[in-house]
Image 1 (cartoon, rainbow, N blue to C red):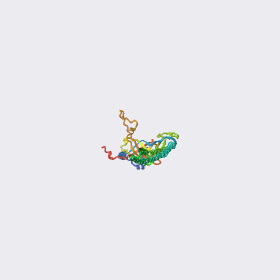
Image 2 (image 1 turned 135 degrees about the vertical axis):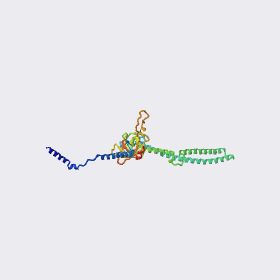
Image 3 (image 1 turned 30 degrees about the vertical axis):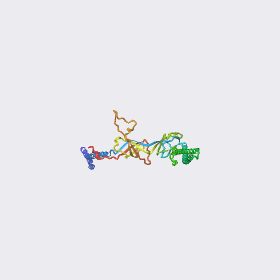
Image 4 (image 1 turned 60 degrees about the horizontal axis):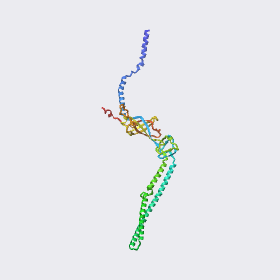
Length: 372
């Protein structure tokens, strides 16, 4: 029995160590892999660190950014009754589109009155010119009469000396001469007054007369006021708070009617940290992402950097001259002009944004060793 068991164990050992065991490959030695990792590991870390250093400081990003747009209050500089409101709440309008209209009848009446007054002034100027010419003719006639009466008075004086003429005849000739001289003075005074009414220029065109210019200014103002009764959009945008204006309401001059938010003058205001401003400058290109539109990006350009931090523009600036002062990293507002491609969704003022700016800054290898 013992021999049989030994024989079976030896046969089993032979089967195990048969051809399959002869073809088995030896296990790889882990020492070679360890050497490779020891060489490549530090090289990869060094290359990654060098890449991070060389590209560091080029890109500035912040999610402290918001969309802004130009907005204004729509108003007119004439007072009147609102006749018609041509837009509704949140309607998109184009430049020059009618927004609302005031009752135009009072302004048409005022324009007609101003035009009638202009015609009256023109007629008055024509009359004044004729009066001035008449006074000039009277002056010439008075000068002629004076010459005649001077000759007559001199003749009567000579006749009186020779005893041929009576004293009464000479006195009458002298009186006629004095009267002619008085008529000359009166005519000259009237001519000066007529010339003054003509603005000192009797030969000037009627359109250059001061009175005519004043009347024409009234016509121009009345015509302008009439055109101001129709209020149009000064820029393309979206109207808001329109429901506050109703037909029949009296709208005083310069009182806001509603608001207009621009759809073209759109920008993003970002507030990066002061430590990120070293290489930031106007003209840098940027990419803007809007939280409301995931997956979409807008191209933008840095247009300006604020001259002070945001804290300096606050109503109550921080007072750092205290005993419990804590240093806080400040933020400087910058403005980015956003390109609006055709078909892009609207950017509404106040939306949150994420901004990444490419400053174009590249570090040099010598900067790495400049501190040694």
